[in-house]
Length: 287
Ligand code: SAM
Image 1 (cartoon, helix red, strand yellow):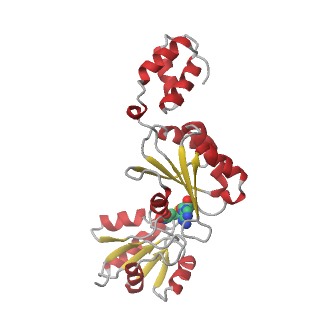
Image 2 (cartoon, rainbow, N blue to C red):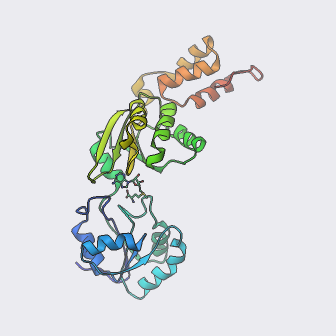
């Protein structure tokens, strides 16, 4: 089967090991009229290794909107085009969403050519549950926003997957310990498919210590996976009853802290529930 005219192919490329390109991807990249690349020089090296000389045009986060018309023009002329990013699957924390949407809206075909993606590669070898997972991409870089996002996820029972920059890993893990509890199981996948590939398992607390003590921990490309929260049903705890008992004996902040540790529910949310029960002006302490 050869490439069809007027079609945009969204092609995955390797995330490290150059052998992780599919035969179909190779053929399509060789056959299309034009390849839109996140970085033409970076992709030029991969394409040269594959012996592919197809014309390249840049399409990155800063010119994606401007490139839409140009790409549509190519397709309207009956040319076929491919879209690739620097590594892995385009649109997965990479450019492409704007053009894929525009091509679909114009009534033309978008065809996926699947292959490597760090999120799936990491999950496939981590040994954490994969029946349901939540891909979160990059967390916000700033502490307060990052913690707020983690709070939103604290009760999610699915395996959580984050991309993280190496120099923020230790901070991110410290925040994850504070919000999810240090005992939560996690796995860090580093440099997947490359020479220094590493999968490091442990509790969040152990991984946080490792990230501070081992200089290799903060090198290369990183995926962080965190086991989901135990569901209320699986902990067997009646959280309403627990809260009633604790609130009768302890200040709200302490009751919230203990209930959060036992149920996995975010401490802030429990504290707010406690405040809502108290009569106005009862003067709850800080959490
Ligand atoms: N489009 C890519 C994909 O499909 O996975 C993701 C691109 S995103 C800009 C780059 C991030 O993906 C890195 O910061 C890292 O978190 C993750 N990543 C990419 N390649 C990786 C690898 N070989 N090992 C671990 N993480 C990787």
